[in-house]
Image (cartoon, rainbow, N blue to C red; front, top):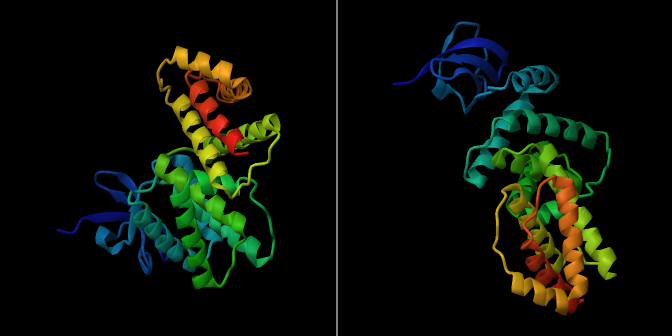
Length: 280
């Protein structure tokens, strides 16, 4: 039996807010779903291409304020984009992406129409850290071009990838950006201390970024990776420069994340840095 909900507010021809018997307010998106509808009309959930909750009052208010400034055709297209992202990621997205990505793409389209160019300083880090999200973001950029004839600058791929990563991990963009800035800071410290420039397109760079990313994640999760005192002593004697650099990186993490870092991280960092110096 088709589940019926009661329309509470028609936002435009493609979006309505309805009262759901179990979830209270839900947002229904679908082509023409709001056409000739009015408050208190009954509507089947099957009529919607996409149904989502906006349990946060702040996000609901943002979404309702945002819609009047966006063409209805873009709302319909955003639905296609979000369905594509969910299918490609193979999981449901956090509800906040409906507000955040719609808002972002609407402004990005306006910027592109005005030929406003800007760069994304973390583009290579984002591509290295979140390869699947980055690939899907490239597909979204292609969808926008195919549908609207608008070509986004490369930096836009990185921003869209961050929105996708935020929606699948339930981390805020602020947290993710802080994470990326920390990794960029640590890579620069490695280059400055070792007197090298790492090719940002190389396998070495990708491995270093991935290693630092996992180390930061372990700090967030307060994960202990074991106590290897003898190995640490040997590495300190054999590779003092790399061992000291590893501790510099650990201190940077501790300061930026305001969390203790397991001392065993020094072992893994030293080994990785020694490989990097040896190759350099």
